[in-house]
Image 1 (cartoon, helix red, strand yellow):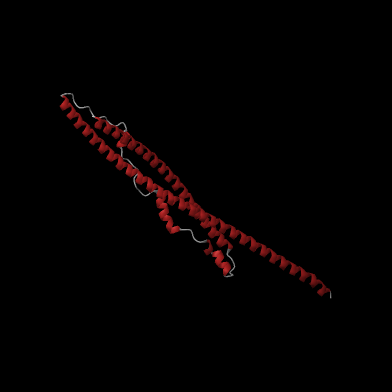
Image 2: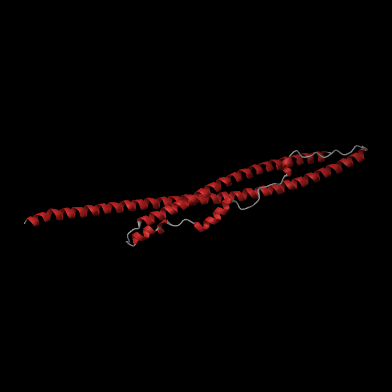
Length: 228
């Protein structure tokens, strides 16, 4: 009887320990699952940020093409205006000679005024070379963000297979590190791209001002010629 009486508390104690162990294991599984879910959300957020960054970079790339095309068209416009300016000076010379001939004047024809817009003689422009941002976008097509629904943790859960928490967290951390590295490169390249845009805009502004001055100057010259 003494043996049976002692075995009762021991069995109860063993059962209590087993229950406590199960509770601790259950808590551990919950913590592990929450940790995995948190890391997966972080991966998803980084992927979304990368998608937004890529979309922004693609838009900057399109804007660069527009600015470069505008810059080259302004080069053509200013070149045509310079040629037109020479023709106008030639017309002025002919009109001046005819006037001197018929009026009997022997004075030489007035020398054609030179343009004060010296910067317009330059046709420098940003070359249409592939920017660093365009290269990153092109290379990034091979490293497109994967779907979070294809994560191994979700596949293992659907197959009722015990999770390898360490392996999953390592994979998530690796994905986060890669995403952060890509975002850093993307951010630096977009900053460089914006600086190039500023240079292009300044160049376009100068050339637009030169073209405007030339057009007004030539209009005045033509008015003078027609009044003679």
